Structure formats: structure tokens, C-alpha cells
Amino acid sequence: MELSEKCELCPRKCGANRLSGKKGFCGGEKDIKIARAALHFWEEPCISGEEGSGTVFFSGCTMRCIFCQNKEISRGEAGKLVSIERLSEIFLELQAKGANNINLVTPMHYAPQITAALDIARKNGLSLPIVWNTGGWELPESVASVKDYSDIWLSDFKYFDNSLAEKFSDAKNYFENAFASLKKMVEQTGEAVFGDNGMMKKGVIVRHLVLPGHTDDSKKILRLLWENFGDKIWISIMNQYTPLCKDERYPELFRSVTDEEYDDVIDYALSLGIENAFVQEGGAVGESFIPPFDLEGV
Image (spheres, rainbow, N blue to C red):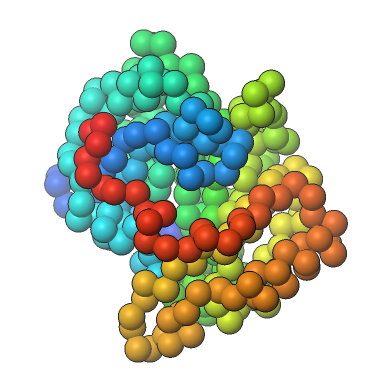
């Protein structure tokens, strides 16, 4: 897998010639840009565990979520350019620190460089499961291209209604691409496998962030996931929406999700028969849960 002169790694297919130094819509270019590489303890329990997840935060993103908690890096501004060789060293350094896995956050626009770095790291002793932590708006062919490099998919499924995806994330045809990509993730990964320590070694976790005022969309997603994948996947139902959006066009996003809204979504999940699920207790909202993008480990 290599970068081409016409980048089509994501559904935007912006066609940027990143080999010549031009940036794609995502902000990515030829070299890899990273904002943080450190042990992370705020993922799902079977990902972080007590030792932490070896998390690498990549700069840039194909989406433009107006409520993004990581806007500092998702716009491709914060971070440091590193070589493929340096990225391979970072993977090994995280393994040496006792990480449960290598957790690639928003990685797909750097997939060619990441897979090359993983090849080098594996030759030098990397043996941890690889987590592809994605916003979910991917192309199934891009998902398929990293089959030999993905043990765990930690993927968002943000919207059922495409109008919400376009309104809040500037992502046209979100549902079609996210659902097709998720099917590919499940197809190539299979049912979850856990180690004796409770850490996931293989599998798919689908995250869904409940948005204020949009519990009906959340319920449609849960039904879709249950009817199509059942217990093959784990579902993480999140209440940590933080009202960072100050755009007057979206006043409904100026508040947090209420306890009643979140409980309503959880009750619906239980009524469907969903058991393989993670839920969040109170206190998950706030900027304190946003990691510092201070170039640690880069």
C-alpha cells in the first residue's frame, strides 16, 4: 500500500497529490504528523486496562465535526512531522512501556505510512495487537487494505441520518460509507477474542456518542447494529458529549446530554437484547478528558 499522486483514501477522494507536498482535505501530506504518543487510560476497559493503551494521536481528519473535542489536532495544525522509521520506533517504545496494544487514533489518511512503519517495527520485535481507532467514515476498500495490520477496530458510528452527518460533520453519504466499512471490519476481524487478563486481542468495538436532542438517531443506530451484527461486536454507548460548539446555527448543541436522554438510550439497548456493551457513568463530560497534545513521546 503506497501513497498515490491522487489521494483517494477516504470518501472525499479529494485527489491531492500528497507525494508532491500538497495537503489533502484532511490536512495530511507525504510525511506523518503526530501530536502525542503515550500510554492512555481513558479508552474502554478491554483496551486500556491497568497498563494503558499505547496511543498515537495523528494530526488531521477527513471529517469536520463542529463539536470535535480534538479540534486542536483534527484540523491538522498541532503536531510534529516524523519519518516512517521514527514512527516504527515510537511503536516499540510504547511496547517497552508496557502498553496493552498500539492504538492508532484517526489513522486512515496515513495508512500507507503506518503499514510501512508496522512492517519495520514487527521485524524489530513488535508483537502487540494493533487498534485502528477511527471516526468510521471510511471507504471499505481502505479498510480492506489494512487487513494484515488491524487486530482490533475501534470505530465510531456517529449518525444514522445523513442530514445530521452533513450538518454537523460535513460528511456526505456518511451512513452508506460507515455501514459498508463496518461490515468489512467485522468480516475481516470476526468475533472478539480476549486474553486471560481481559484485554481484547481481536475484535470490533463500535462507539456511538449520544448527542443532545437526537436520541431517536441513536436508537436507530443501535437497532441497525444489533440486527446486523448481534453479539459479534461490542458497542460503546457514550455520554461524554462536551458542548464546545459555539456556532449560533446549532443551538441544540450548546448543552450536554441529560441523564434522562442517556438512560433512555441505554434502556432501548437493553430492550433490544444488547449485552456486549460499555456504558459511561456520570462525570465523563468535560475538557479534562481531552489529552494534552504536547508532543509527548513524539
